[in-house]
Amino acid sequence: MGIVLSRERHPVFVESDVEENLKIASYLSPRKEMKDMIAYIYRLFPALFPLRKRKAGFLSGGEQQMLAIGMSLMPKPKLLLLDEPLLGLAPAIQVKLIESIVTIRKNAGVTILICEQFARPVLPIIDRGYVLENGMLTLHGTGDELYNNPEIKAAYFGV
Image (cartoon, rainbow, N blue to C red; front, side, top):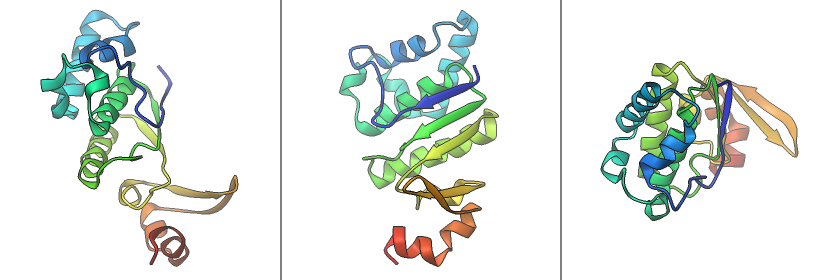
């Protein structure tokens, strides 16, 4: 699979359990590959394993987001688009999710494009960042350059 989008607001099948959601996301994959990927998702997001038989609609927002990203990884994309992955999540869950994104990038060989309004926790882990205002590119640079940019700090961090 080439490109997969993980949309904002945790797009999961709420009436299906966690494992069924993962299987649905990889229905075209060979059975062995599907099992291997499910095992990988449980290693990446260990909090999902004990919940594997729980309906996705009964998961917390953070658990649903982990599941949504796991579902996006099932077809083994080359490019993963994450739309607002931190939206509505508690700071502690955001940290865990960011750690998982770093792991995916390092170990799965997946290029990740993150679209995030709450960029502060994401900037330290990105290679390149782009700031759009009204659909126009206004700033770009490395994560460190953007994080330390006075314009970014004033506009987005309240500093």
